Image 1 (spheres, rainbow, N blue to C red):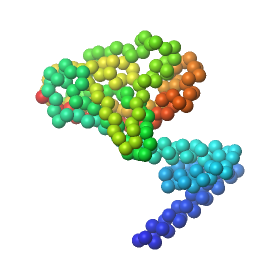
Image 2 (cartoon, rainbow, N blue to C red):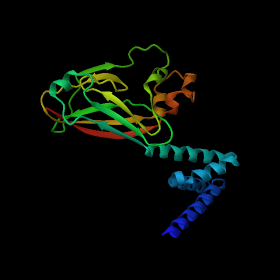
Image 3 (cartoon, rainbow, N blue to C red):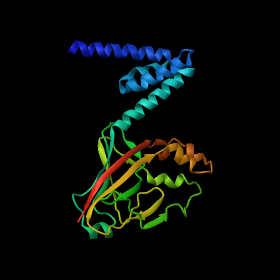
Image 4 (cartoon, helix red, strand yellow):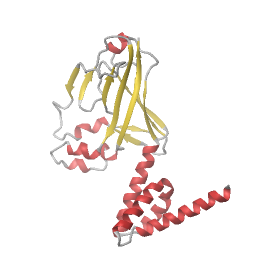
Length: 242
């Protein structure tokens, strides 16, 4: 068994070396295929990729940098879990009256590096029949703002999930403040089992495109929107309301 594992590792190293060499070939299709294979190989290819980057130049260097960035991003994604944490049951009066009632959006980072996230999301609430419940409140978040740059207003909306730790973001249903677009809320008319659904999304390009001012701060690599992990994760949880 041990010999089979060693053989697999040797073959993998040979494949990675071969694909790295193909990144400098004249054939564009061959370069594209090599990039794809290296990205699919994942973290196991990183030592060889970083070693090759030291002596690379031109097209090969640019491709190596892109591949490394994508492999590292995918690895970080795989080590970040996101989930709704809800109480076993919630009183009808509590969920209708309280700003926070034990509902949590939990980010867990199992990697060795801190991760920046954008913990805002639009919520959908459905009754036991699967019918969506309309929100009773909608107050636009960006009607008035202190800064000219729309993106700069987001600076304090990002959070860091430390390495090997979790980040809990509390939220309520009656007063829901985690939407990136508005402050809103829902009311429950009766007890029953409800469903909450969301997509935790952060798309850097879309956020930057939302500001038409072309401000220089958009491109600043130190800003949280340029350090945040891009996400597109669907979440669902059941709420037992009594």
